Length: 139
Image 1 (cartoon, helix red, strand yellow):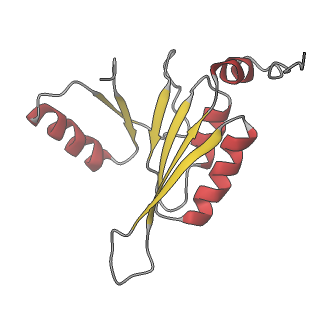
Image 2 (image 1 turned 135 degrees about the vertical axis):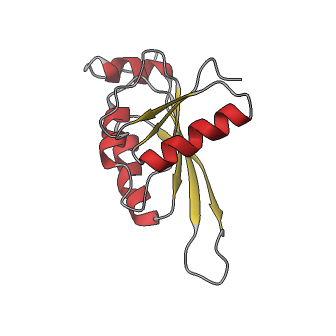
């Protein structure tokens, strides 16, 4: 139900596979070969799905912190890098709204974590232009 979908992937083979998969299913999406941490988000992006490597998404979450994005779904295979990147998002006004853990590789210590972050539009727009979030008066 998205107006448009842009996938950003650094690995050339993964980009080719994604494009082939999208075409085979008759879907509409654009796949860009780039580093997500250096990718300039198009205007109007409201939601982002991150699925970084084990090293996490430090650069990408820094960019998201400065953006107008309202929702981030973060899939992680390393809880420690997720915690580091979550701190960046929460410091920028996002709230952790849910966390789910998936045991994808039974009989190992590895888990996948899906963390959902959201922030309200007032905080997103004030953060993106470099001003302080609006104060909440108590009247």
